[in-house]
Length: 345
Ligand code: MRU
Image 1 (spheres, rainbow, N blue to C red):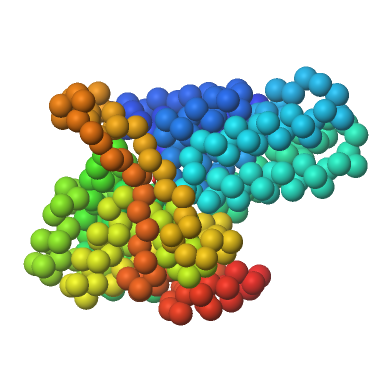
Image 2 (cartoon, rainbow, N blue to C red):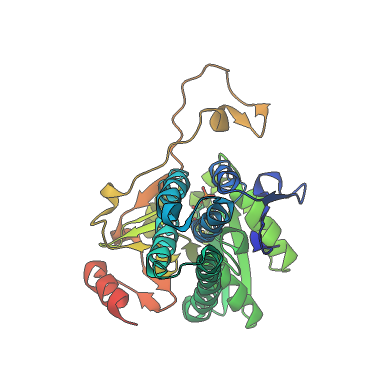
């Protein structure tokens, strides 16, 4: 199952809102379609959003009908639209900045088709970098997984959330394939059920033992000694290590500390945002009330009930045992060690 696939002049997007019941695709031929697919969460997960936006940028360049001179202004409009889709995952802005830089570096190229080729190459590089980083995260992260362990994860930080392998699920995949006796507890992850619909599906497809639990069961499991390790993904990591991830992650981290269970974040360095000093500065997306009042179209609450629906929360760095990246595992003090990691090539 590939979250996205570039088919030459079309971006094939697996519609994750329909999983696991239906495997449906949207073949996006315009940047607007890619923007809509990100907003509606047909494609979701920080690294997948970044790569999809990069190809959305390419589609904008392919759609452009004007002369060479007007391209820059047009691409600014494309970039602004794609950047408006979801505010929390920094990978979106990271990928768009890479595309913008590549466009700037191509200013000497006269032929529009050659500029387009350069942009396709950059989007391909972003996708390839994501595969490479995720693979390394899995290999390096394997070190913190005991030979026999029950791992709790939240939301979906798997292949579907990335270009391939996943982040938290990359660690789990490699631990499992290296022969460790792994069982995963997947939080269902209300309101959009990424854990129940996507993580459970991915792990079952890979024949990795998985048990689905409702979000409010995690504390009881930990109290019973059933969780050895928590591994989650991230949407943005601030310079001090505070980490934004799917709503509910913070509660898990506090519970993990109370039960002395190690709590790890797995994320590529494209998720680290040193421009943001602490988690308080990370913009948190609020989504439609409908997502709370209904569960996939089925009413669950009084029609007019007041709703608060933040899509992410911030886990303070003090609850995080370590951050697993493709360059190594970072531990406290995060302000010092994340900076060191980012300057390392
Ligand atoms: O709202 P979503 O489904 O895009 O949120 C996804 C998450 O919170 C993931 O944990 C995060 O993006 C990391 S994915 C490798």
